[in-house]
Image (cartoon, rainbow, N blue to C red):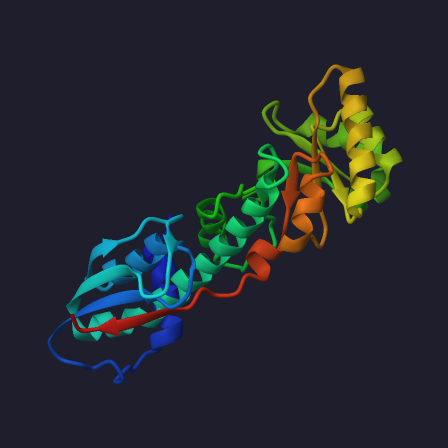
Length: 276
């Protein structure tokens, strides 16, 4: 949810304390126009910016809608001064979110060519202060949010294993977590992955493994899970690009998580124009 505090912070950053650039009398109609193809997202955030300034959003597309060059994705009506004060912030947040959604949709489509059962997920590699916007954009693109924060799932990483050992680390966190909290273990080798299953992991993350090794290790994890009478998910992660997605989707994993969905997505190009 976008709060007034979020919008205040964004506007303060852009407008400052003595704005005369946008001191324009009268009312104005505005429209946010796509300049390239992509997937719309961040429309709620853009609308929140204008609502804070008492500018009406009279129409907008839904997050997740495909857009083409020339499409109007949002229309406004209200004070010219307030419209112009808000337009750059609205363009920036919508453009960034739409870029995330567009990259996510490309990854989802790439995975679907090989399997309908592979989820494309984001990571916690988000922009401080914009995690909510970026995670919602991932969903708009057809992806999964993964953890929204550290409390949503226990992730046993290499540093935990180095300090406590794999089995002891899983037991340590399992003892402290709610029954409803899943435990994921990061593994860098096939042996570690199987040990993670035996230790009680709900999800095994195969970190920085090439697709061929991932396929063999995913089979080993699933075999170990069957032997243990449990369902264990396999996640692939670590520098995976959209171009890599088909190979990982074909490797038998359940989830492909990609930090690049949020930290490297190019902005979708929008332009804000006033007038009818």
